[in-house]
Length: 397
Image (cartoon, rainbow, N blue to C red; front, side):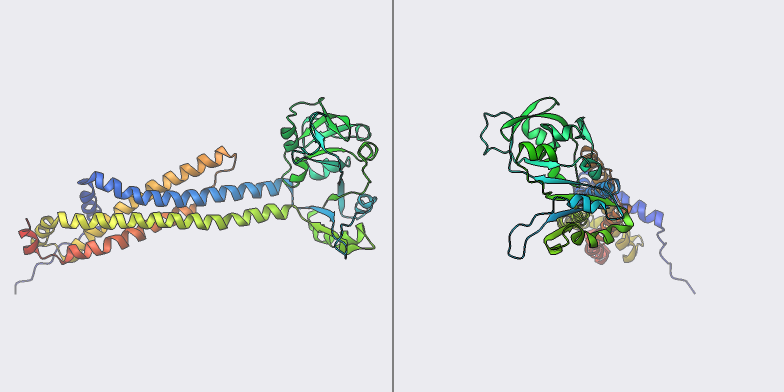
């Protein structure tokens, strides 16, 4: 009995070769279709990478600055008025066992100006505050120029400027004088950035004794900064209100500045999700472009399909051929988009002095998304090609 011939099977290498042959014959169309996929993938990779780099920078800041600092400030009275911290509040905080160091600032009504010719109303957003000698140590800050207050200069008309205050006053060196409280103060130092205390960056700081003598300061601290061991932060936080103001602990507010940085790191995902949605739309548009390219390819290659069918190719083999073309086209765009997205992330992160971070799962997810898009985009054209009758296809002019 004569056995019916069976069609040869297409191995993986054969499928890749046949699929790639269809792409090589139309390079311009392939490039434009892959470009749509690449734009969507590059957008998604860049969004995830930049967000991860920003979050890593914030986490590194937290590791460097520590999460063991608390701030104590005066809250509101029961009648809605502003309360005041006791004059000896800093000393009382230092008596708490786990507290390692504490410093404070106190608000004044004075303004700081570059010269006495400038109106008092023009403050430039700079606050004039009294500061204790221990403040810089507590904040773990650094002096970029000059020196910090000491036991001698805290009693003299000497001022240390925060980084933002120095820029707004146009002070780029020490030794110059600024007008404060109807007299000249000499700038003895300029501080570096203070991520955990941005209010210090916008302040002109003088010693408590000098502020009381020259700026009508009442001696009551406005904000107390303290550091304790990491494991005792919550315990210290619980006792600070009653320690600072035993009579009215409810009028004392205690906060943890590092929580703001942690919240910023967590909030970075909200904006990321929006931009990921835009990247997904671009990827969808790219998938539509791939589907359109494959449909046109099927229409243009009907004679080729008819010839392959007449030579023994099965419908399944024709279907696999066009599906492979769609997958290769999408994978090409996905790989190009991943490279572009990674390069964009690295370039942006380095320009902001951030550690560049491109999560491996983002690359893997992007490639997986392109394969899904390629499969969906190629299904209809592949099924349409497989349904073509050999005689009808060969008769097409």
